[in-house]
Length: 113
Ligand code: 5GP
Ligand code: ZN
Image (cartoon, rainbow, N blue to C red; front, side):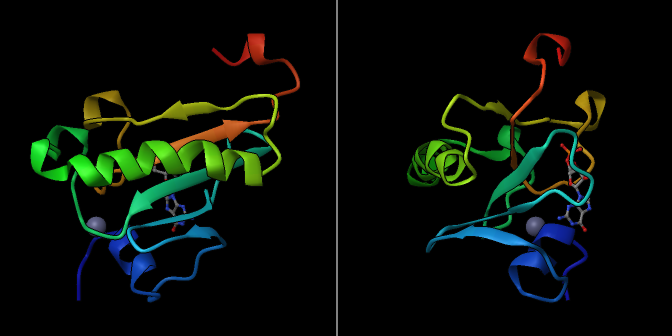
């Protein structure tokens, strides 16, 4: 059994509120949303961070970038969304399985940095 939290979510060992799934990716609600809509988009394959992706992951990178706006639209974020990938502990990465945060529906986007 893996000790990676997101791999355990992919395996169904830890429940998550899933909002998206395709052959390579899943999307699910963040457990502690920082905005009215806050979902995470992750590859099913374990990759530690963006620093651990390279040319061999081209197809996966493309799939993540293409899926992000699809998922955002499905979450009702037609007016826009924020895409964040904290990379490395020094910049706030706490789960070491690469993921995009998709955030939106801010009441005042100017205040959220
Ligand atoms: P990071 O800080 O690594 O960029 O983001 C990790 C995110 O995972 C955080 O926003 C945190 O709230 C979320 N998270 C941590 N544990 C769980 C969990 O068990 N389930 C879900 N759905 N999200 C989690
Ligand atoms: Zn993992």
